Amino acid sequence: MNKFIANSKVSGKITPPSSKSMLQRSIAASFLSNTETMLIYNSTCDDSDVAFRIVEELRSDVVNELNFGESGLALRMFTPILALQDKEFRIITEGTLKGRPTIDIEKPLRGGVYDIDGSISSQFLTGLLMALPLVKEDSMVNVRDLKSKPYIDMTLEVLESFGVEIKNKNYKKFIIKGGQNYSAEKIIIENDWSSASNFIVAGAIAGNVEILDMNVNSNQPDKNILDIVRSVGANVVVRENTILVSKEKLQAFTYDATDSPDLFPPLVVLASACNGVSRIQGVSRLKYKESNRAEVLLKEFTKLGVNISIIDDEMIIKGGNIIGGEIDSHNDHRIAMAGAIVGLISEKGVSIKNAECVSKSYKNFFNDFENLIDN
Image (spheres, rainbow, N blue to C red):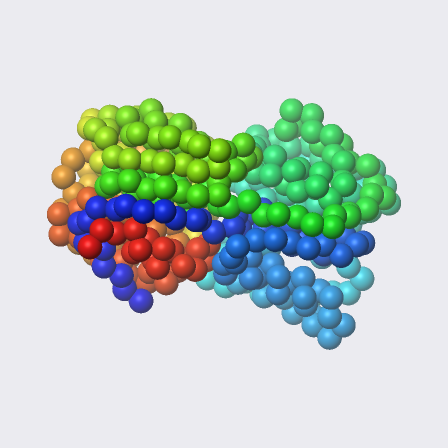
């Protein structure tokens, strides 16, 4: 599917989807719970659908093959959980997930001391933190160079809501008592800041957008987008859980996205609309995404006339006129969304190839986005 977004203004209200990160974690925790849990959410996406399906299949006596699709979190989170199960499973992955780093767990999972490298992904740690409370023995996990610490805060938040206790020693050591039980009657899944970031940027560069039902006290790292758009000069008003963002003259910025790599695509769009040269650190975190996201951003945004370069671990973007043209999403949902947002301020508009990949995190993205466009 191709999508074309013309130079346009935006205006209106939008409710982002439920956080796929929080929903996937809560699905796994519900599976591990010894009581029935009601999950309340406003939408699903491909990744959360994978987690629901994996849980359903794990509860089946006849399924011995699990397909994780392209969900990196589901694969890395459920791998230690699978090591708790009595039966053996064949694991299947698709697309770019075939080449992304995974974790090997010896079965059956036991307590003890674990040492892991947290520099590539915090998702390996998330899986261990979810599974180890259920083994008999106590455990300690030592972590080197942990990235994306806020995502571990999200994991710990979900565990706490299910009555599981883990001691966090400055993100370097996690102490886990064995023999714990998961239990929660009702879990409400908050909405997704990663998805909201696209609309926040759209309002800042091309009109005004009101984003509804957002938890401004969330542990999601991408809520930092609010501080960034404020810092560049956009008009931002927060009223309880509603955010209003409107266009103003924007100045260049510097931001370290090491702990929030999913913000890179919308931040590149924002930088393209700012006066001056913006710098975004943390490029190394983009290699093992749905695409090599740094290379794809450089290649595809250059096609549109954006002045963008990469030096070491820093992406450098000079704001200015954006010609527009055609980009390939490379089946990366966040590239497709960024292409749509930058189309708003391009001279000729932007056509996005393989735009259907947005369903990985946001099935109704284009419907919701096009409803904001002033015709």
